[in-house]
Image 1 (tube, rainbow, N blue to C red):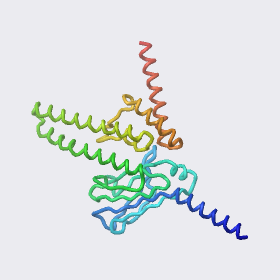
Image 2: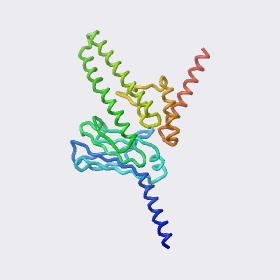
Image 3: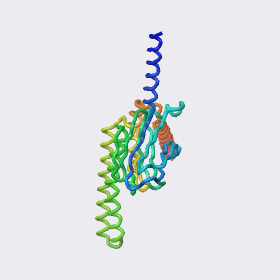
Image 4: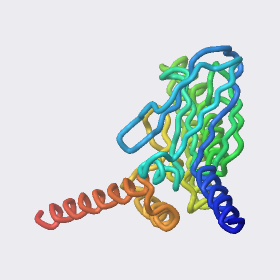
Length: 252
């Protein structure tokens, strides 16, 4: 009887560990708000899906995600993108997977501006990407205003354009180094598709080799990830488009 009891206790402990592993906690504190509502959304290949919401208490929020079905368990097995939203225009996107307990400290004025995040390796890497993007955006917007103020001065505009190209090259180099340093991290997928004002820093056609490398590495690490499967489909489509272009070129 005593032996059976120990087996029973061990089984319960095993199951509780499994549940804990499948649990994702995303919590934090937002400065500048009190009891406003905050939303948590999941970003999939199809778009954005709100999965939870809560009324904050003195700017604090706490979300728990449990693997309650096979689909949720599959999601928890690889990093997924989650978005914290104060409004549709004030959001913060992070990466989380089963076992992560993520803590965020941000400002209500702009969640993504200078936030601090801990508790998950992929989440921390996402923070680095956001920080680098912000370091690109600030001077870019300043250059845009300078450009507008000197719209009729050819020399001034040429100087601004040269400075912008330098900024662009510098940020793209950062992204390339980031992907090289983290070849099997989902954050590298985000780095490849990072954009500003709907303009991507990488092009799927021109940078196809880089996309192939990222997909190859992530496929080994997260074969069931929906993001990785989507990248594979994108590469297949790009291959078909290239074949069609080559076929048209040959016929001419």
